[in-house]
Length: 46
Image (cartoon, rainbow, N blue to C red; front, side, top):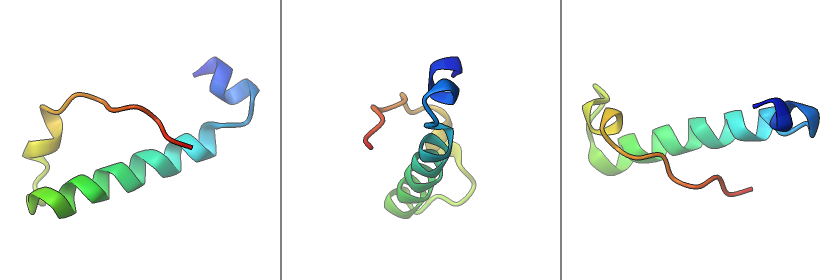
């Protein structure tokens, strides 16, 4: 995280996380989040 902060990438990472969470919810149809908890973290696309 320090490198992301240093290069001004935190907002982009935050947006990616929010998009990924909602995409997973839409794909799984599971609004309580159980499907997300056990999934590995994917790569960050800019």
